[in-house]
Amino acid sequence: MTGFTIHTIETAPQSVQPILLNAKKTMGSIPNLIATLAESPQLLKAYTELHQLFTETSFDKEELTVVWQTINVEHECHYCVPAHTLIAHSMKVDPVLIEALRNNDELPTPKLQALKDFTLSLTRKRGNVSEEELQAFYQAGYEHKQVLEIILGLSQKVISNYVNRVAKTPVDPMFQKFSWTK
Image 1 (cartoon, one colour):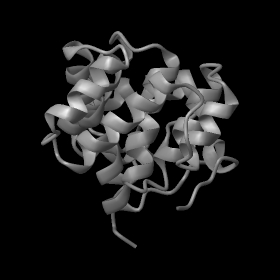
Image 2: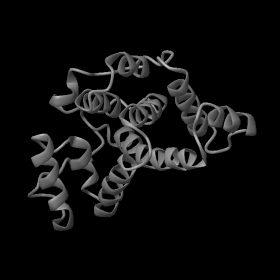
Image 3: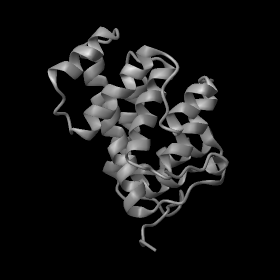
Image 4: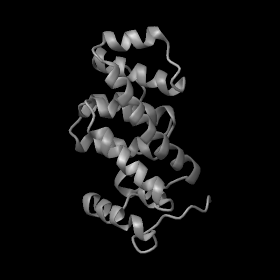
């Protein structure tokens, strides 16, 4: 037991209660990650803002899923892999892509594979990617803008993946059918 509180609307700091109310309205319940993040209003606000900003990048729904799940799997996040599996299904992402990401398999297109490879390299090397890796990413059809956008997505995922690891956030019932272990 880690002792982290999974807040309710009533126990959360007042400044983040609207975020919890919105999560409940949108998802039918408050996900345990959001409820855990509520302990630090600044972190919860940062996470939700980064999430929103990342969804507004130039990436389409499949590319967003590739970035998110590549990082989730690399970080071995017991919570985020199932959560983003449900999110991907709700976004109508191809189930073949969803399963390939969960299983760390080859992706269905060379462009998506290049995105996965670059995201993985950026994550593993903490930004210290080679010129060759950058060129391979650009040759797949991406630009400088997408390099920066991956860093935005990585920032969001560091928050959620690390909090879930430290707090041992329980997987919500709505995500449990997509449970994942490495």
